[in-house]
Length: 607
Image 1 (tube, rainbow, N blue to C red):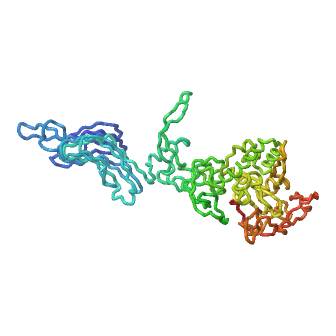
Image 2 (cartoon, rainbow, N blue to C red):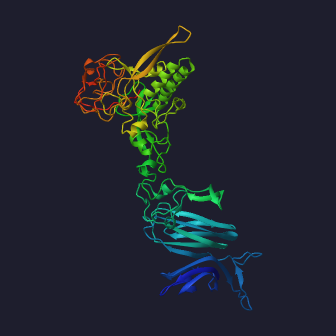
Image 3 (cartoon, helix red, strand yellow):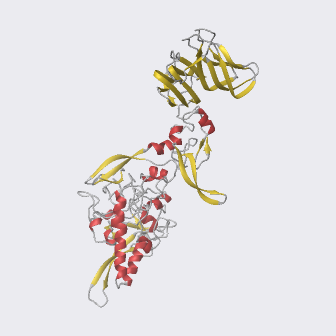
């Protein structure tokens, strides 16, 4: 039997390694190193004898064997001396007998008991001649399986991963061997055995070398910990897939399209909060539940503790966001703000149907009326209407508002620019478009309205965008920030005609500097800022928002007035007094409603 192989290895002091065939040394290394040394050795064996090929040694010596081939010959005793005849070779005619079966050990690798996964890859070629002949590459030890086999000439290739070895491994050694039967031979060009100690889907070597990424460069992970950063996501979940993409890059000062290969991260495996938005990566990737209210089978608003209206039902939905971007949907709100403060979907710029309703029946409505006035010969009426847009904060120079009427005409609401808790009268959608559409009769008999305060403006001031009256003092947050508009009507006669037009406009009766929407008693005089309120109004048990028809039956309804809630007292003793000069005597008045009245639960506007 003639053995041909290529060996590489090294040995230090008091160490050695050997390549053995049937207990006979084919090649020894006792010191120094050797690289791709070709060896050819012939040994005598009896017919049918199994010859085991092994690599053994004393650490720290190492020896690898590749490009292994085996030829068999026999002596012809018919006379006149021995004439060698090659067996297991492709020759014309029939050979006298088949080759004996052989089992050649190629690798024997120790596998520590703490290793979770092992991956074996390799390639080579098979030569198979005659019936009932075959070649197989097998692995034994921690797993006993056939990696690849062939019954005809061709290539051998294999790549297998064996998972969860530690609990069930019967051996702590892995042996790779080539098994031939009949007229067959095999050659392995290369075999690689990878260990994945922590079982996260990446080999130990890959985790130590690192992963090339598009934005973070090369990053490494801990091969002994499947969750390197401890954020609840395994490294494999965070690193994502390996991709090849065309990307723009400068080559010798010129812009070219260059193919680049990298791992596309789902999140950073060594950072608990990749995008720095105060949400753990596992929270963003794993999604969270949000309670919502459906109206007419559409997700209408977030579900607070408020009562349901006809056609409404409660439901729990799941929202998720990207761990790579602090504002996943690019709506100006961080994912953290959307989860914790807004209760909106970070992957959608418009989460709830209430925003679409406000777009159609609030923003588009006031724009349509403004267009109508602008096209008429009523410049005075048009100017009054534009002033009203400013007084109700539909047009403002704040970052979250359109700063001109022309910008308002193309304004698109989203989760940040909407005003979730904007208060209107019931059924406002069916009213005549214009400012009269949003007005309601307050408890002092005046026609009043809420003031538009976008969600982002509320967030910036520390207010609750789902609570129209954050400090529960009887004034909406918008009214306290920008002042209370009182609505009035004016009649205009069309030039050259006897036709008159009645129009609703907004004018202020409260100091435009406003009061503090987070303090029920801004001037600390012992009385609430709000000077109108109701008891038991719809969604709260205390003095809260005023509006038409919040409650029917025994509660306040329609244009009813509760006299003891509209009583006033003059403010002269407190510094920086607030209020309204109701009787035009030059002194502001505030409500007789004592601050000692329980504030109770906050209210919610969901109409």
